Length: 101
Image 1 (spheres, rainbow, N blue to C red):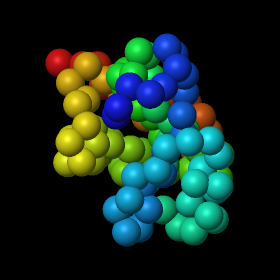
Image 2: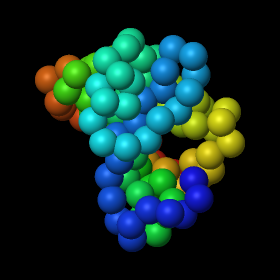
Image 3: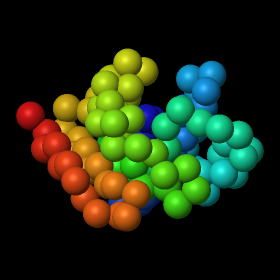
Image 4: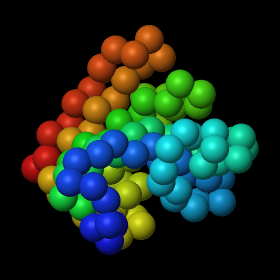
């Protein structure tokens, strides 16, 4: 993350089947309608990620995949040491909340 974001904003993200991470608005726009490995939202504050979740109306990522999001972002060299992970089920209920260590 290069810090070129607003002071506080929420961005959609997708991770494509090819492993590319895309940030912006609207999951299906980002993925061009293709299947994705992961999708959700990133909450940003002052250019840093503060929260990641698996909320996507189109893709509805499973909680099992969402529970790996912190590891996925670490693998692409994004600092998630201060990130909250919120995992939702398909009914939109939070079922897991991992706090920063």
